[in-house]
Image (tube, rainbow, N blue to C red; front, side, top):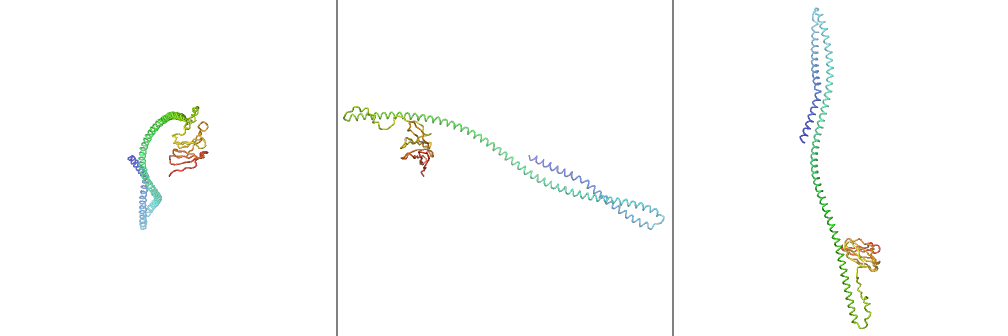
Length: 342
């Protein structure tokens, strides 16, 4: 590429030299012709001077000659005077032509000076253009190098992006598989919890039945030990089941998205407050034979681990795992107070 640039510069320089030669060769013939005319004028001026001298000599010599040669001398003088006049006219014409040539020489000299000045300006401009071209060529080379580096970086980044995309797709597939497995495990856990709850309910029913039978047997023994009539006491044994423990499940519902950490009854209404790991406190109405949700109290940053009503049942206090306590209004479910342990 550098060789091509040097050949291109040499070609431009050769063309400029050839053009300069062609421009100056036009005036070389005119200058040569001018010099020749100048030499001719000098020669004619010298001949004119010689003729004037000869005329003066002949005039001075003709005054002392005899009368015999006077006619011949008169004829020769007349011819000489005619030649002198013709020569003088020729000299005048040559002088006028010389003056015109001097004028044209001045114009041509001025034109040559102007052309030389233009040539100098063009050469200086060519030098500046060559310098700018060299700078632009160096800049072009550096830009090409940078472009190659950028292309290499682009290819590298493209490969890294493709690898990252593949890793992201693999991670998404893995995440999807983990989520599916998590869903399966969650369903399995809910099934296990349901089975555990049923098993626990069965065990509780069995325990309560055994406890009730044991209490009834103890009451029967105690009644037998009491003196007096014992007839008709069997029908009243059901009155002694005063422990208040339920024999079965009254309501079964999903209170929270995660674990249920706290449950509390309202002191004035049949309302149950539950707090769970989903950072919410929920109110449930169980007084109509069905379980209905009365409201959701939000604002906690961590899971709820304890809930408590005040004595009027209008406010509810909850403690969370972020060492904070918050109080809500039961009526409008708005957060009233929030404190955090420092």
